[in-house]
Image 1 (cartoon, rainbow, N blue to C red):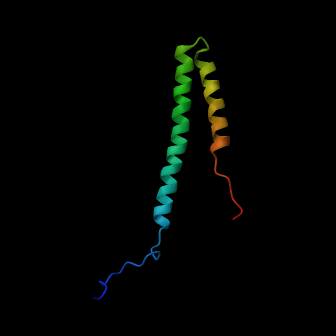
Image 2 (image 1 turned 180 degrees about the horizontal axis):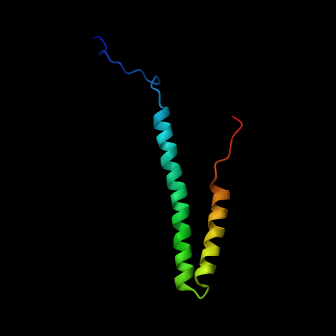
Image 3 (image 1 turned 135 degrees about the vertical axis):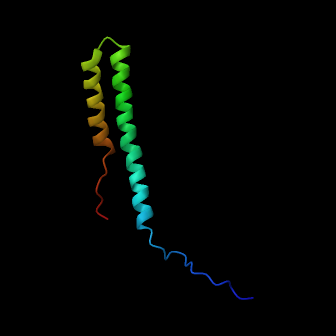
Length: 78
């Protein structure tokens, strides 16, 4: 019995667009989560403690700076 004819060849497809989309979605998820966490942290500090608006904003800025330093992409030498 003959194999069915097919244009598909395993491993021959160009996947750069899929990789770019994956990296975009992962980046948006990572940075969006950081900024959403900072906004929730700021609002919680502002409304649920006596620190107030400026104290909550300062704490949120510190969270964003630390999160940015920890979550940024590191270049590899590969």
